[in-house]
Amino acid sequence: MKKPAWVIEKEKARRAANAETLWLFGLHAVEDALRNPARDKQRLVLTRNAADKLAEAVAASGMAPEISDPRKFAAPLDPGAVHQGAALEVRPLDWGPVAEVCAPEGVRGLVVLLDRVSDPHNVGAILRSAEVFGAKAVIATQRHAAPETGALAKTASGALERQPYLRVRNLAEEIAALQAMGYVALGLDGTGALPLAEGIARFPPGPLALVLGAEGPGLRDKTRASCDAILRIPAAGAFGSLNVSNAAAVALYAARMAQG
Image 1 (cartoon, rainbow, N blue to C red):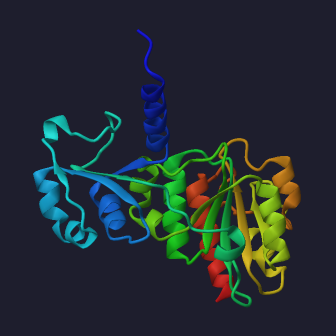
Image 2: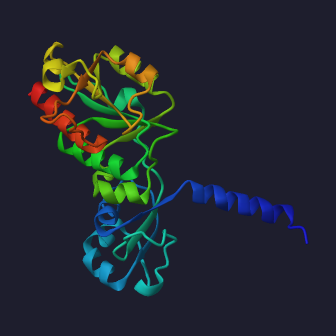
Image 3: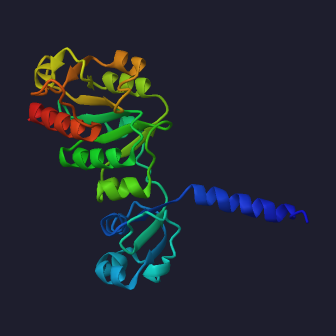
């Protein structure tokens, strides 16, 4: 029997609404999202134990949690998700345009751009480092990059609620826009001609944009060509290398020290 048109439209609307939300999970990620007034919160599912641990954050949010049996947890999460008895359905955060979020403050300004970094655990770790070292934003492309997900939020351990994570259409265009705002764009690659600290010192004091590529393929040709310089993190051994989240942490530290 064919479904009535109104039923089909209602199902389409429900699927579209579901596609616009995501589930955060884990005690830290859920607590920070509950305390974030900018986060649009839809549904909260907790075990009795998690509800006790998050009582203050739940009260501050004004939400009424659904208490769920831990053996049949009600939130629609992947079976392997380590939810710790806490899950929160939310809408993605809207931080605003790059030009507004990344506006430099005199010579100070620090931004991270990610070229096809699709592992949510790497991006989550980079968000944590970006928050620690005071980056204005982490910028990634809308395609071929890790979206805002529960796994990313859990790895970020709350940083997703405080550290702007911006998704853009074209990375090379955003690099050019940042350069027009006064940023120097420094690509990180093992083939870079200069070590990181020496390369940063070659430029006058000012805002810095650190550009990192995915492990393996690295920076795309157009991204590389858009950078003002390609630098490397020196290794003591002949075969030493860092994954992208560790490289981002080292680069952020070096950039922040250079800016004072």
